[in-house]
Image 1: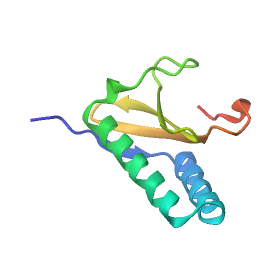
Image 2 (image 1 turned 90 degrees about the vertical axis):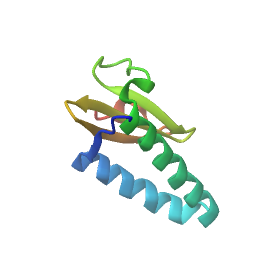
Image 3 (image 1 turned 135 degrees about the vertical axis):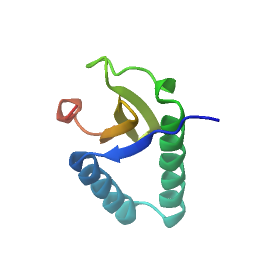
Image 4 (image 1 turned 30 degrees about the horizontal axis):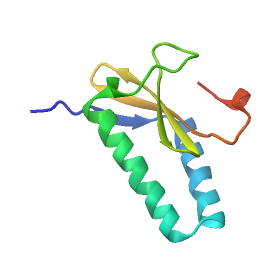
Length: 100
């Protein structure tokens, strides 16, 4: 049986998720919003089953980065029996704004 890690979101990542959803609700269609949600859920499911599936982020070796879609990247790290989502970064932002 596969090991499934508990996924926890930092306050910062939750804030970014809320901002992303607000933006998508305003600028995208409902179909695109559902598509993004499905991609995000799928990415988190992959991470929870196999945390090492995505590459290390260049800036910090213990943090990994998963591209959810061309607009958003998820940054996370493995802590014992859990996965900590650190950031859901909108790729069109200035890269210096990353909080990882």
